[in-house]
Image (cartoon, rainbow, N blue to C red):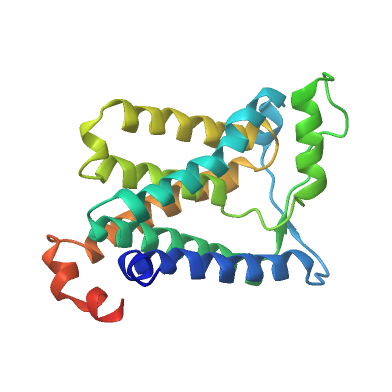
Length: 223
């Protein structure tokens, strides 16, 4: 057990942050708010509701979990893992700050559904468990793109062309699903994309250079 913990202790970075994030997000979801800023554009009205997008939307969860597991336990380059961890943590921290100082919500969810099927039933369940508040920018979008960047930049995974291609298709479908399920406004999605690009550029600059930056730099001293 000691050997296992010593070998994979770097995984505590994401594990500990995930717990902190869940606690803070839960607080934001349940804190009393006098008024929310409603996020809406005319483009949201042009996008039709399509319950079939619940499939890629729900695939976001195993996509994130399995990818993180790979970078913790199977990726040999810790430099790449730390870049992904910092990327995710920075974006999610910005989201928490925005949600705290700018309480936001959307009113674009349909009250009646055009079809009655198992996909619609899952969407109804999603609506009942996930409030339409604290949506800006979309973490579904940000995290999907952050993971896509990490997969494409991974020294091993990028050699297998099907993996980055599959990740790219899934990421695109997840982004579209947030709008076709009326979970997010076009504004949320657009800001999620912009934030992912900005954070990715920052992380690339922060972790620029070769693996020696991890082996000899401040990250090694911290972790």
